[in-house]
Image 1 (spheres, helix red, strand yellow):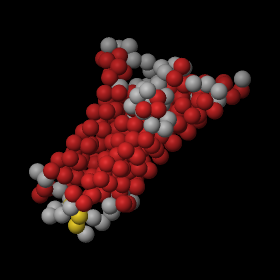
Image 2 (tube, one colour; image 1 turned 180 degrees about the vertical axis):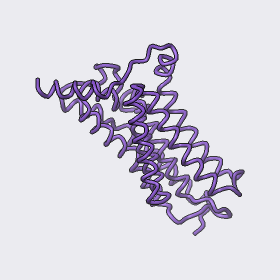
Image 3 (cartoon, one colour; image 1 turned 45 degrees about the vertical axis):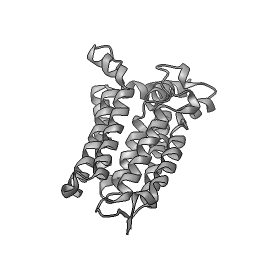
Image 4 (cartoon, rainbow, N blue to C red; image 1 turned 30 degrees about the vertical axis):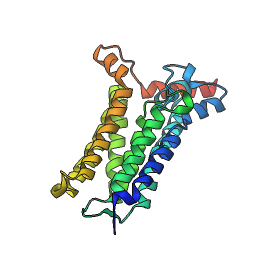
Length: 244
């Protein structure tokens, strides 16, 4: 079924606002508050998965990762299902493609720049990984295993290299590349269409957001001053705190 952009533009606006507000909810802060602490005053001060793992152990870090991935992915699913089966009038461009990435990008903006935390949130990696994982699963059921493979590869890189930030950024970029290839194959004959260009702009925007949020980590890495993230040490630290 075809729909004109003029008939549905307000849906995109509503989804963007709601996704942003969902992104403003920070699970790292909530979990640390449940432990009568504030993760923003601990370690790097970043309310995200990596800092939670360093301060509270891998289990709490994994819990934060899980909830942040859900936060990044559920708005994407909502945008997909609302417009599933619809195309923009006069084109073959699926509205659900644009809708899910509008939701995805704005939930990441909400996570990194939450109005509820004076625009000082996390760095968006976990939510972005969740966004791409859910978005790729909308393509086909077997794409879940592609996303899972990239997530496992990311974790392995972090474990082997101990470069947490760089491993996370590479994982996000690889997921974005896979989605870009899918769109290139799908819209080969419509690459100059405005909606298709908007799709790639959204993918680029998300990568820019996560890389920009890690600009200090990248500079530290280039200067040889970036802190290592040892999964083994984090695991031992969690056990020590539990035994204590």
